[in-house]
Image 1 (cartoon, rainbow over the protein chains, first blue to last red):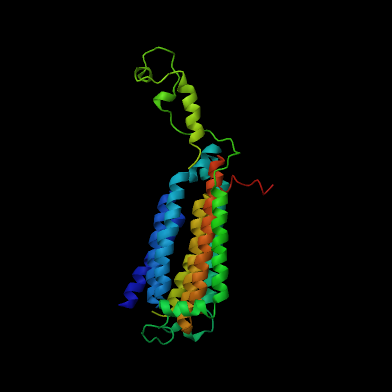
Image 2 (cartoon, one colour; image 1 turned 180 degrees about the vertical axis):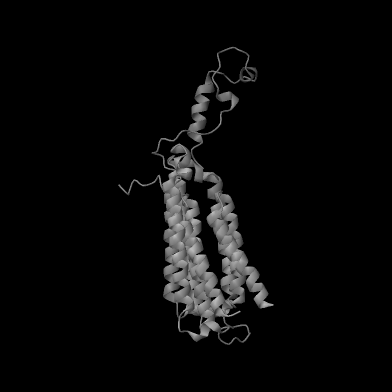
Length: 230
Length: 99
């Protein structure tokens, strides 16, 4: 049974990876990466790494992918074609671009061959085996208790450094993505009917309800001034 | 299924991620392909940890996940900043530092 599960999960892993690389729309690439990560979590489970598989699903496929989806939706799904449009469609299928793509694929194939030789051609006899012995139990290999014990004893320094790295990255992300006041940005909010200036006494709804139409201009300025915070 | 099969899958995923990093032009997809490469490395780490019956590889895999999360945070923040400045979201166009 485990070999059947392995091959299904391996097909999911490799298919998801191919989808990430090949699909044109970045949104579909993110979805393919979610498939890839879930299949990879199944492989981790087969390797008896329960805690890492759970972290993979919760942190990666849950949190990080949600972040990606938000940014793709914010930036726009057609990021690939923006540069091509700016250069007049030259980048789409020019000979240089396709040559570079072919070169990249060739280098990737060479890398794959080299990795396979390095990983599988080693003298290690144990890679033909099924791994070390495993005895189930509450503190067995790969359980949260096992990982937590290692993290808080042997790898305490690594644990602390990783937490500090996360803090630095969080602060850096906030600083990078912050809305700066100094940059002249076009206010891209849509106009409401009250913002459009109309001549006096032309029977606007604002006059009917007693709002002075001369104040429409000032109200619009006040609105854009107040709409900066988020 | 022997450990060698897992190593083969990890090598394939790593090479696919490398191809994506080299060929795609959207920095979002480049980041996704970087994740692929990190995941290939993670699979190899966990396979070797299983081979030795030792938890060190799993700890290193968790640390790699942490680093990947930090990298995603910074990378996506940079992409959002690039988008705010109305620059093209394309790694071929963004080469001012290249001279």
